[in-house]
Image (cartoon, rainbow over all chains, first blue to last red; front, side, top):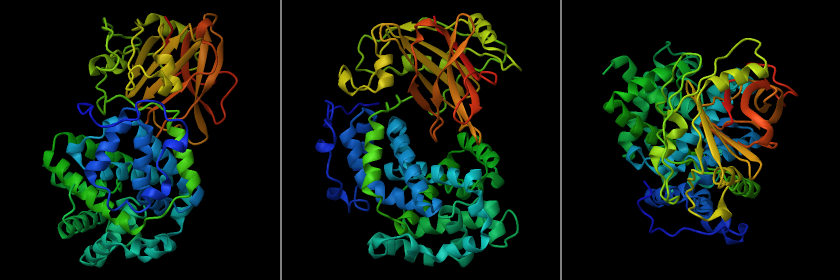
Length: 215
Length: 274
């Protein structure tokens, strides 16, 4: 590993935040930061490059924080989870394996799993009791999303989602955005036990095929 | 390919399996390249939904995240799941010479593996007192590597995390221990008067509990060395509170949240300081 030592690295200690990119500079780069650029930033993080990490944060924080907020709901807890996620990304950056998927997908996987683990802990159990709210949250994107609706990528995702059957779409949304297990999804959607996992998989396959998502 | 397990790929990709299913599917994944490929694709497909939920985090979060990471050392590129031999005998050990790397700037996965490949297992015993930890630890040979330094920052000590400063001390000694999935390494420097611990494979503490570290003197008396909270990746590291000079061992127990003045449970792991 670390074969590419030619990439620029801070090399010396960064004297406070002054040397880091201003947050506004990268406010709109989430959707456009190329996978390769993110992977290179991760490689630099693995070598302890804090400036690279700041760039990585600026390029991905709207996406990761938005997902965590969507799953966790509580704002303060979402900030806490997001901080934990970025700390894990920093600490495990050397473990990112580009042959197994994109850098963004790797980071989102950490964010998703951490957020899901959090809501499944007993502290957050009360949220899961409100099944009425849960069954109705799947179409309520606008509540937490900001300007994302306008983005081309979001439009593309919406069009792809529209190709799923209602059952597939609800199952995928409850699992991914709601953080529910497939067993819980089956209960919420009044599906026979064991069928929700098939709906989730079929829905994801259709999303993949419609959008041509690279792994 | 097991058709039933194969159908879990989608639920796995969106973290919709319970713990038992997840474990079963992950062991299936090890031997099923088709499923691995499908999981990678479906995971990416699932993440596309996050384009619909973007939200701008408060600027204060950016500041906390960036100041937080400067305290933390990125882990070296070890394998995801260290294949540590797990002897189930009371105390069983594999030890061998480890060659210190002259070039600290060239991380050597072999020497890094010393963290996980040498097992010191201390049994969990009911109502053991701290002094009995020492017996267990003493019965186990310990791998101790003097002055072995690894740092991704080469000789730039200005960016070393507090944990790394201990690990990188000229007289640093490292001892390691494994039990099941848990791997622990303590590095200590008598010159600095500091010790640091790094753990892997440590699940979150149960609700209302915390992991607490202890310095154990040769008289068997334990004094608190701080609380440890593992991350979501089940890893954690910290500089222990207090001077290791008088300690004969470092131990870790599960205690009520906030910690205890003295250990109240059997140690998960004990590392004898050479």
